[in-house]
Length: 164
Length: 418
Ligand code: FES
Ligand SMILES: [Fe+2]
Image (tube, rainbow over all chains, first blue to last red; front, side, top):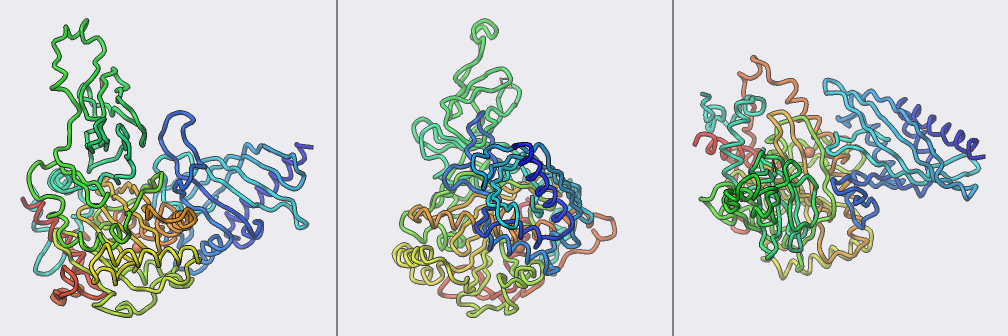
């Protein structure tokens, strides 16, 4: 049962990667629920287990809802988003998918790891590496993403111009 | 030895590309600029209690901002006197002692050397601990919660140094009765580019918004074509503040805020009437952007405020440390709206800020060649057309102008030639 569930989730995550790397951002957005929260708290160098990603008002690299995700995508479509124009070459790798909580058949908590390679014209090549905590919900149309918390493993991160 | 003064032509208003690309220029900047100016190190709300600390940088030097056991704010070099390892490698916290990881010398938050392993057996008690405390930065002063430190023991006070810029900073940090606090955490990111290009942009480059940030205009969130704004000279203007500082005030309609935030804006406007002069109060909650020379910039925009330091990391790399500020009295919901807006717009992933990084990186990567470096960059926009006005300090000109931006290089030249 969990294996089957994990395969289903992995499949939709792989689909996400192909959509993102193929510049199909609107199709990727369609995999999100209307109440999506897509966010990445900043990292801090503190003692072991002292970092608290849920600390009240902790800064976030981004903390988006459906509307602001739409803005980010619309911007990329203008042809003038110079940080991504000409577009970067991106390659998403998603692995270590683990179902954390499947107690409800409609909604699962899933952990995964990612590496995203990015190369831009003339600029250095970069990796974005980290983990994700997702909530996927089952709808008539299939699995949809309701929340994604992205934990970057960088201290000083690069200019984040890509979706994870 | 390079004649640094010759790299900035005061009559023609030009600046040599070498100012942005050369390693020798950079090395001298670290000494002549970063050890002789007031550098921003943090906000008082980040170290509220005795023994609180924050680690950051002043130019090339790692420093500790602390509140010592007796409650005084101090800035200390984060470098052990024994072999120089950083005595603290965490971002912030509370500690009675910093224990150097290497051999264990222990310092208190006032910088005093308290513990030396084997002091008796190996040093024969001959080490005078009073001589070997952490190196203290001699001058530390605050401006409305913003803490600055200066390696130079002599010279202007912070207030004198800020000069006219203080009036403009007040539009943000003194617009409410109980002042501002910093959000927990720090946006830390790396950009290719020279630190001065970042500083000049925030200090008075309104000109780039329509081109570099055109994507924002296209999706309806950017400055429209009318660069002069609705009220040129009055509420749409740029200022050369002296000492290399610059400021932009732009009175754009920032659209409809959520009701709770709109109500809070009203509260700020009411409070500003009491905390500021009438001339200042009229400008509160415009789009405001400024640079305090050399490398502190501030941006305040639809309720969010970022103070960021463009830490120089060689001539072609910047490490940005950006802290978010918000009114102490803002309701929690407003703080959340503000935090999210900051991430969306001006941050490591900001939809404005992403593009800035690409411009500075491109210039750093491609413009250091022997041919291009012979031809200076043009900073002539608006020269000679600035005016002194009765209602506000500094040299004023409506957007766009490079009067303020070039002021940064005038100050740079003066300090580099010393
Ligand atoms: S370097 Fe700190 S104790 Fe030796
Ligand atoms: Fe910009």
